[in-house]
Length: 315
Image (cartoon, rainbow, N blue to C red; front, side, top):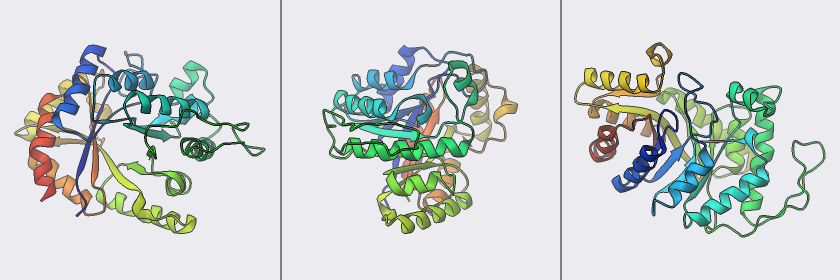
């Protein structure tokens, strides 16, 4: 079976930056493969007006206090920035980090933060996904050293654009988040090195089958795309202890439990229960797991997921 890989996403809301940065360093010390944060301007759990830090500048700060772990946004909101600017940011971060950048991109979904900031949200999810496809095509070309001039009628108007200097990495990996079957997974098939999805093993199996069909249609080897699964684990000795810890974290993040009780991306339980769910996802081809960790960044879960759960999930 393919090797099991683990990454951590630290929520940027409900925290001060000192704790945020200290926790990032701890993630690297524990041996995780990659380190992520969101790309949001408003908090997305609970009260949207609580404090939240910006993603790109967070990654730049983390690049200077870590040495090994890969860094990325899960995922960058394509609507927020011109893709040429995003490419320049990605290249700069790749140099800042010594070649550890992963470029995460997605169509964006949170209308409130767009409206509040005066950012064009588009007319529909479909239009935003068309923008994403056009954007990723340009970014991939630029990162690989090519020039981009936009065809008429698209969202962007690049004119013989080139990105210099080149990245440190020969090939900066692109992560696409989302599982829309008609558009998002087609973009994944065309351009992504990593794909982030969520859901039960049954849902993942179906989405993976759709992705494979898109890969066949565009002539892409589906094995080139790393499947990653997002989850939010809280690990304790008993389910009851895990539940109490979860409730405390949500309270700190101004999030009523009624908002998250039905969210199956929260994996709340014992190490054995979490490992069992990971094994079930691995059976359908997902071998990279990215855990979202709310402030105050549960040290017990961070330590036990890689030190205790990972060996069980590898069996």
